Length: 259
Image 1 (tube, rainbow, N blue to C red):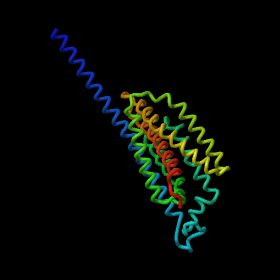
Image 2 (image 1 turned 180 degrees about the horizontal axis):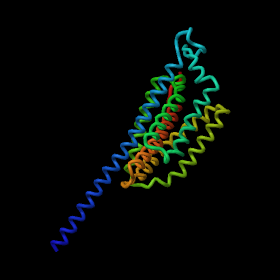
Image 3 (image 1 turned 180 degrees about the vertical axis):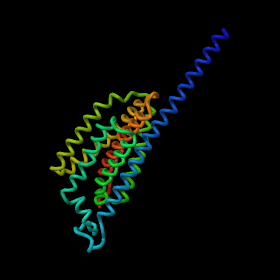
């Protein structure tokens, strides 16, 4: 009997040790995902602010176009916001994210990181126009609202025991609907439709934040090589980065104060 008890105790201790190693590996993996995402957001913010600073001036001699707020666009700003180049700036991040998603399994971790950083910078440049549209105070306020909301939703997705996989098809259909409605509204320029898109967008990207967090957590495998784990971390960071950026844009459309 005593031998049986010792065997049981040994097996229990081994199981606890294995669980501890797994939990430590999972925490390290998720931390790398959030670190990549946070650095990507930092690059986006710096790129957006830098592009905006280079785009406007108060010096009439350096300006080429007047803005409603009394500032003027520089030649760089005019090319970025008013010339056909703006479509390249808008579409370049979309092309880059498709490239990264399609090629990441053939990239080294370093190459995937570099592509992600480049993508984040391109997104920042394309988002720099928000500084022309919204007051800087409201941009900061909405950013912190987004950060708090994202943190709570991602924590829910990480800790919940509820299986969120059933949300996937519903959220995907909502995302497709938002994309189609946004394209249509480019031509209609309807404020009512834009409001509806923003409200639905907040709900969809809030759901995607929790859903993607759980999916990223379930992607973790203790036996992954360093290369595979690195690729998974970057792709997970990309998914959460997109959720954050889109949630921010939708909330800014609803709560941002226009210049």
